[in-house]
Image (tube, rainbow, N blue to C red):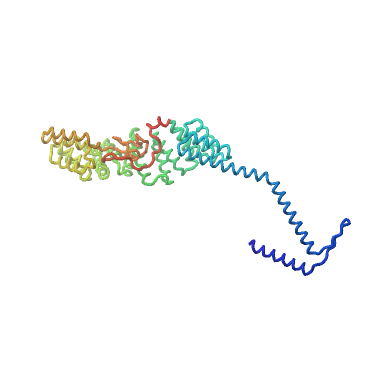
Length: 453
């Protein structure tokens, strides 16, 4: 657009110059005794020079007038660049675990910048890294007065409350953050974790449903978590004497967590307590198809307390037929066969279990059962002792293993006692292995709180 305008202006000037050249004319100026005679062209050139000079003088005067403001702006820009450089250096020091450098950078950024939210955040993190809890808490509390740093301050105070073991304050802070941002993942998970720690199962179910609805927790994981919560709600209802409610909740838990034996065991016990033996048997056999477990076998064997050893063996064989390749099926039949003194049947199943045992070999319970078989069938004390000695160096018996930390438990509480992770314990017959990827624990383990303080 500028080029056509310039061309038009040049054309106009050329036309004007040509017109003046064709019509030179004469101009006489008389003023205060002075007389000037000149041509129109010379007068126009002189006027042009005067205008140009005046414009140049005006530009210089404007620059002189604006010079202080320009200098102030350049100084502010230099301070801003230096302040952001200090912020960058401070956050890098925090990432590197260098508290003195982080605090120094925070002080420099606070002097250079008017960006209070950023400098507050850096100063608070530097104080936390340096172990100055009082200063960090003061700075994070100051963040609550600013909308742009409110959530940052809430999270910092929440972490501080968790480290101090103040679950009530932590829950209040997490719920406030959740009200401000209903889809904030850490706030939802923090509320859920604290509700679990305080055994508020019903409230945790509501929080879990909200987290699943907002896609904070994957649907399959949320489904499994809900089953675990229903199991705990059922146990709580049983303790209150609400047997019917407990049984209903247990049935829902079994449907949501087919990979776990605990819900089925709990439901079967409730049914047995009501004298519903057939229903309990159906529950145990359905669970055995997806989650064979020693406790299910014990409950199944106890359905007929007055049965003969042969009848118990027949019952164990019917249960094993539901999942014939499972190690627990072989163990259940072998144990019943040993009680019935059917050595061949016991040996067949024990040999099968030993052959299919995972590396590095059969578990201690298999070794103990083989030792019992050798001593009972052949009165072979040496053979039995050999299996018992072998048991010392063999893998531990099947147990619950946390997918988060690899910790082992004999039972399955909802929260891992080692790392505090929720619903990460799974029954394992394999040899111990390093921890594998799993959801991050929502709270520090109780055993870690002292170290965090």
